[in-house]
Length: 178
Image 1 (cartoon, rainbow, N blue to C red):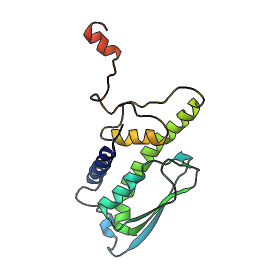
Image 2: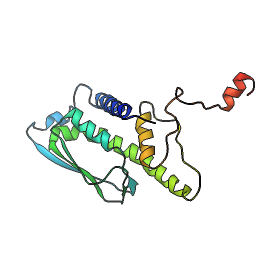
Image 3: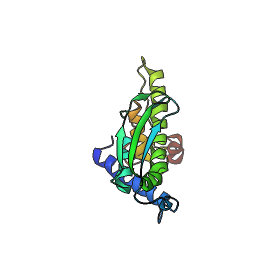
Image 4: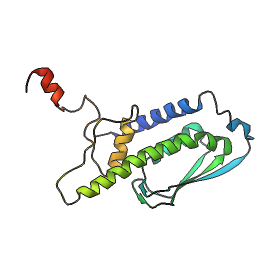
C-alpha cells in the first residue's frame, strides 16, 4: 500500500521536521563540547522487542551530520532480546549528542508499534484472521507507524480518507440510512 517513493519522502520529511523541532537554531549544550572531540555510542534495548525504524535512524544521522557512522547489530523486523545492542554510532561528539534523542524517539516509537503488532499477530496464528491497522496514528507519523505495523507482521488497511471506503455508523446516520 505504501510505495517506496512515499516511504522515502515521509522519512525525509519526518526527520527534517523532528530535527528542526528539537534543534531549532542550534544545540546550545553540545556547542560546549570542543568541535574536534570524537565519540562512540551504543544503543541497547532494555526489553524484548521487534526492531523497527532503521531508515529513520539512518536518515536522522545523514541529515544532521553525514560524518556520523551507524553500525547496525540487528535487522529490521528482528525479534531482539533484552540487553542486546541494536546499533553503535561513531562520529563528532557534538553531533551524536544533538541527534541522540531524535533518533531514539523514532526507534522507540516505531519498535513499540512493531512489537505490539507482532504480539497480536502471533495470537492470531492458526486462524484466518488478519490484523489490519487504521489511520488513527500520531499526526505527521502515519506512514512511519504503518511501516512499523507492516514490520511487525500486520497489514495496512488504508492511508487516508482518499484511498478506500469505510462506511461507519456516523456516515449512515448522516445519510439517513444505508
